Length: 223
Image (cartoon, one colour):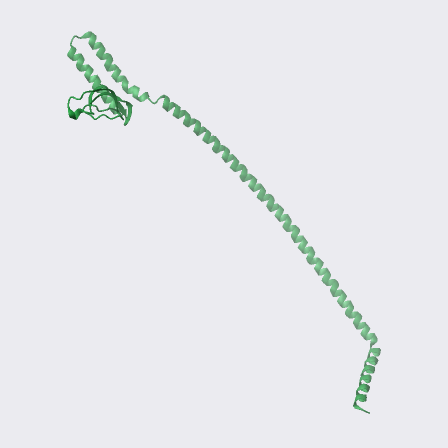
């Protein structure tokens, strides 16, 4: 027999041996396969149950989180509503306070304008008293010098009162004509060359109140 024939016989022998082993142990093999299939089936069933438990747990957590979120949203909404109401109330109070302040300021301003000259007139009353006493003295005395002296004292007192309240006389004597404070009523030939363009005479004194002209000085200008 050749080598190739021996190999074929050996293969046939192996196949027969396997066949005999399968036939002899068929029941055991079937039992093993069934047991294995059953175990795999139970394992799959167990895995499915575990997966279902996991899914149920996840759903419960999501529902719990959803409830917590809803409660948190409600709390935040209530807190924001309360803060809005507090801010609105505060805004209304501020508006009311500002309106009261505005009305009070307007009233104070109106009173200030209405009574602005009160202090000045109160300070002028003693001068009126002096004039009344001077008039009474004129009727009861023939001493013209005494009357004149009394009037001069009242005049100086009145000028002092004006100066104390910011009223000053605009200088005119030998001053260069200035259109900002002087008003030329006429011109006149200058008595000398150096008096040209200067004030020769003042027909009406001018006054300033805190450096603001309240009456221009009416003057005669040399030419």
